[in-house]
Length: 200
Ligand code: SF4
Ligand code: SF4
Image (tube, rainbow, N blue to C red; front, side, top):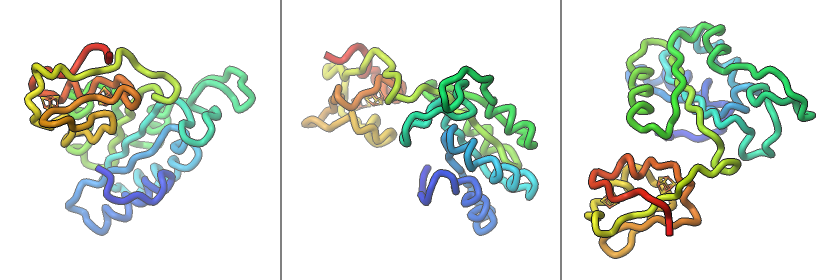
Protein backbone atom coordinates (compact mmCIF):
# COMPACT_ATOMS: atom_id res chain seq x y z
CA UNK A 1 0.00 0.00 0.00
CA UNK A 2 2.87 2.42 0.61
CA UNK A 3 3.70 4.58 -2.42
CA UNK A 4 5.00 7.64 -0.61
CA UNK A 5 7.19 7.46 2.44
CA UNK A 6 8.24 10.76 4.00
CA UNK A 7 7.76 10.31 7.73
CA UNK A 8 5.04 8.63 9.74
CA UNK A 9 4.10 11.82 11.59
CA UNK A 10 3.37 13.56 8.30
CA UNK A 11 1.32 10.66 6.91
CA UNK A 12 -2.17 11.89 7.78
CA UNK A 13 -1.68 15.40 6.40
CA UNK A 14 0.24 14.10 3.38
CA UNK A 15 -2.70 11.81 2.51
CA UNK A 16 -5.01 14.82 2.69
CA UNK A 17 -2.88 16.77 0.22
CA UNK A 18 -2.72 13.81 -2.14
CA UNK A 19 -6.47 13.32 -1.86
CA UNK A 20 -6.98 16.90 -3.08
CA UNK A 21 -4.62 16.26 -5.99
CA UNK A 22 -6.12 12.87 -6.89
CA UNK A 23 -9.70 12.83 -5.59
CA UNK A 24 -10.64 9.63 -7.46
CA UNK A 25 -7.92 7.53 -5.77
CA UNK A 26 -8.19 5.97 -2.32
CA UNK A 27 -5.49 7.43 -0.09
CA UNK A 28 -4.23 5.60 2.99
CA UNK A 29 -2.29 7.09 5.87
CA UNK A 30 -0.40 4.82 8.25
CA UNK A 31 0.60 5.85 11.73
CA UNK A 32 1.83 4.01 14.82
CA UNK A 33 0.22 4.42 18.25
CA UNK A 34 3.04 6.47 19.73
CA UNK A 35 3.21 8.78 16.71
CA UNK A 36 -0.58 9.13 16.77
CA UNK A 37 -0.31 10.71 20.21
CA UNK A 38 2.64 12.95 19.54
CA UNK A 39 1.74 14.26 16.10
CA UNK A 40 -1.21 12.47 14.47
CA UNK A 41 -4.12 14.15 16.27
CA UNK A 42 -3.88 17.59 14.55
CA UNK A 43 -3.96 15.84 11.17
CA UNK A 44 -7.15 14.00 12.13
CA UNK A 45 -8.77 17.27 13.26
CA UNK A 46 -7.87 18.82 9.91
CA UNK A 47 -9.21 15.84 7.95
CA UNK A 48 -12.52 15.79 9.84
CA UNK A 49 -13.01 19.55 9.62
CA UNK A 50 -12.17 19.71 5.92
CA UNK A 51 -14.28 16.63 5.14
CA UNK A 52 -11.39 14.75 3.57
CA UNK A 53 -12.03 11.29 2.19
CA UNK A 54 -9.04 9.25 3.39
CA UNK A 55 -8.45 5.96 5.19
CA UNK A 56 -6.41 6.14 8.36
CA UNK A 57 -4.68 2.95 9.49
CA UNK A 58 -3.40 3.10 13.07
CA UNK A 59 -0.83 0.37 13.72
CA UNK A 60 -1.23 -0.04 17.46
CA UNK A 61 1.35 -2.38 18.96
CA UNK A 62 1.14 -0.60 22.31
CA UNK A 63 4.78 0.38 22.37
CA UNK A 64 7.13 2.95 20.93
CA UNK A 65 8.74 0.20 18.92
CA UNK A 66 11.62 1.67 16.94
CA UNK A 67 12.69 4.61 19.02
CA UNK A 68 13.28 3.35 22.52
CA UNK A 69 10.16 1.54 23.79
CA UNK A 70 9.37 4.46 26.07
CA UNK A 71 5.81 4.76 27.37
CA UNK A 72 3.18 6.99 25.79
CA UNK A 73 -0.48 7.80 26.64
CA UNK A 74 -1.72 4.56 25.06
CA UNK A 75 0.48 2.17 27.05
CA UNK A 76 -0.97 2.68 30.53
CA UNK A 77 2.27 3.82 32.16
CA UNK A 78 3.86 7.24 32.55
CA UNK A 79 7.37 7.98 31.33
CA UNK A 80 8.54 7.21 34.89
CA UNK A 81 6.81 3.81 34.84
CA UNK A 82 3.88 4.74 37.09
CA UNK A 83 0.51 3.12 36.23
CA UNK A 84 -1.83 5.61 34.55
CA UNK A 85 -5.18 5.23 32.80
CA UNK A 86 -4.67 4.52 29.10
CA UNK A 87 -6.05 7.00 26.60
CA UNK A 88 -8.03 5.07 24.00
CA UNK A 89 -7.09 5.88 20.40
CA UNK A 90 -10.54 4.77 19.25
CA UNK A 91 -12.27 7.12 21.70
CA UNK A 92 -10.01 10.00 20.71
CA UNK A 93 -10.84 9.43 17.04
CA UNK A 94 -14.57 9.30 17.75
CA UNK A 95 -14.39 12.39 19.96
CA UNK A 96 -12.69 14.24 17.09
CA UNK A 97 -15.59 13.35 14.80
CA UNK A 98 -14.33 10.29 12.90
CA UNK A 99 -17.56 8.40 12.25
CA UNK A 100 -16.12 5.09 11.03
CA UNK A 101 -13.68 3.60 13.56
CA UNK A 102 -13.03 -0.15 13.65
CA UNK A 103 -10.54 -2.00 15.85
CA UNK A 104 -9.24 -5.24 14.40
CA UNK A 105 -6.52 -7.86 14.94
CA UNK A 106 -4.39 -7.66 11.76
CA UNK A 107 -3.34 -11.29 12.12
CA UNK A 108 -6.87 -12.42 11.25
CA UNK A 109 -6.44 -11.82 7.56
CA UNK A 110 -10.01 -12.11 6.27
CA UNK A 111 -11.47 -9.85 8.96
CA UNK A 112 -8.57 -7.41 8.51
CA UNK A 113 -9.23 -7.13 4.77
CA UNK A 114 -12.97 -6.71 5.43
CA UNK A 115 -12.28 -3.90 7.92
CA UNK A 116 -10.09 -2.07 5.39
CA UNK A 117 -12.70 -2.56 2.65
CA UNK A 118 -15.38 -1.08 4.89
CA UNK A 119 -13.16 1.92 5.56
CA UNK A 120 -12.49 2.36 1.83
CA UNK A 121 -16.24 2.29 1.09
CA UNK A 122 -16.96 4.91 3.75
CA UNK A 123 -17.25 8.53 2.56
CA UNK A 124 -15.08 10.82 4.69
CA UNK A 125 -12.20 9.94 7.00
CA UNK A 126 -12.47 6.35 8.21
CA UNK A 127 -10.08 4.64 10.61
CA UNK A 128 -8.99 1.07 11.20
CA UNK A 129 -6.99 0.48 14.37
CA UNK A 130 -4.93 -2.67 13.95
CA UNK A 131 -4.05 -3.91 17.41
CA UNK A 132 -1.32 -6.50 17.78
CA UNK A 133 1.68 -6.78 20.11
CA UNK A 134 5.08 -5.64 18.86
CA UNK A 135 7.07 -8.63 17.58
CA UNK A 136 10.24 -7.13 19.07
CA UNK A 137 8.63 -7.42 22.50
CA UNK A 138 6.38 -10.48 22.20
CA UNK A 139 7.12 -13.23 19.71
CA UNK A 140 3.89 -15.07 18.91
CA UNK A 141 4.23 -18.83 18.72
CA UNK A 142 4.39 -21.42 17.37
CA UNK A 143 6.74 -20.54 14.52
CA UNK A 144 5.81 -21.78 11.07
CA UNK A 145 7.27 -24.16 8.52
CA UNK A 146 6.47 -25.40 5.01
CA UNK A 147 5.35 -28.97 4.38
CA UNK A 148 7.26 -29.67 1.17
CA UNK A 149 4.97 -32.57 0.30
CA UNK A 150 2.04 -30.16 0.10
CA UNK A 151 3.83 -27.11 -1.33
CA UNK A 152 3.20 -26.75 -5.08
CA UNK A 153 5.68 -23.91 -5.51
CA UNK A 154 2.91 -21.48 -6.56
CA UNK A 155 4.81 -18.66 -4.72
CA UNK A 156 1.60 -16.98 -3.61
CA UNK A 157 3.04 -16.65 -0.10
CA UNK A 158 5.97 -14.69 -1.54
CA UNK A 159 4.06 -12.54 -4.03
CA UNK A 160 1.27 -11.52 -1.65
CA UNK A 161 3.27 -10.97 1.52
CA UNK A 162 6.88 -10.03 0.97
CA UNK A 163 7.74 -11.57 4.33
CA UNK A 164 11.55 -11.77 4.60
CA UNK A 165 11.30 -15.16 6.35
CA UNK A 166 9.90 -16.89 3.25
CA UNK A 167 12.63 -17.79 0.79
CA UNK A 168 12.66 -19.65 -2.50
CA UNK A 169 14.36 -23.04 -2.44
CA UNK A 170 14.58 -24.80 -5.79
CA UNK A 171 10.99 -24.88 -7.05
CA UNK A 172 9.42 -24.54 -3.59
CA UNK A 173 9.77 -22.28 -0.58
CA UNK A 174 11.01 -22.57 2.98
CA UNK A 175 10.72 -20.44 6.11
CA UNK A 176 13.87 -19.08 7.72
CA UNK A 177 13.25 -19.49 11.46
CA UNK A 178 15.52 -16.61 12.38
CA UNK A 179 13.14 -14.17 10.64
CA UNK A 180 9.78 -15.81 11.40
CA UNK A 181 7.68 -14.13 14.10
CA UNK A 182 4.94 -16.78 13.95
CA UNK A 183 2.32 -14.29 12.76
CA UNK A 184 0.49 -17.04 10.78
CA UNK A 185 -0.42 -14.81 7.81
CA UNK A 186 1.42 -17.04 5.31
CA UNK A 187 -0.57 -20.06 6.52
CA UNK A 188 -3.77 -18.10 5.91
CA UNK A 189 -2.65 -17.11 2.41
CA UNK A 190 -1.41 -20.53 1.19
CA UNK A 191 -4.17 -22.12 -0.92
CA UNK A 192 -2.73 -25.64 -0.43
CA UNK A 193 -2.52 -25.57 3.39
CA UNK A 194 1.19 -26.26 3.08
CA UNK A 195 2.23 -23.92 5.90
CA UNK A 196 1.77 -24.55 9.57
CA UNK A 197 3.20 -26.32 12.59
CA UNK A 198 6.31 -25.61 14.56
CA UNK A 199 9.60 -24.70 12.92
CA UNK A 200 12.17 -27.44 13.27
S1 SF4 B 1 1.62 -20.48 -1.10
FE1 SF4 B 1 1.80 -22.52 -0.22
S2 SF4 B 1 1.95 -23.88 -1.97
FE2 SF4 B 1 2.37 -21.82 -2.72
S3 SF4 B 1 4.63 -21.63 -2.59
FE3 SF4 B 1 3.80 -20.85 -0.67
S4 SF4 B 1 3.83 -22.60 0.71
FE4 SF4 B 1 4.05 -23.41 -1.35
S1 SF4 C 1 4.38 -16.89 10.10
FE1 SF4 C 1 4.50 -14.70 9.57
S2 SF4 C 1 6.63 -14.17 9.95
FE2 SF4 C 1 6.56 -16.41 9.83
S3 SF4 C 1 6.98 -16.85 7.69
FE3 SF4 C 1 4.76 -16.72 7.90
S4 SF4 C 1 4.27 -14.59 7.32
FE4 SF4 C 1 6.45 -14.69 7.77
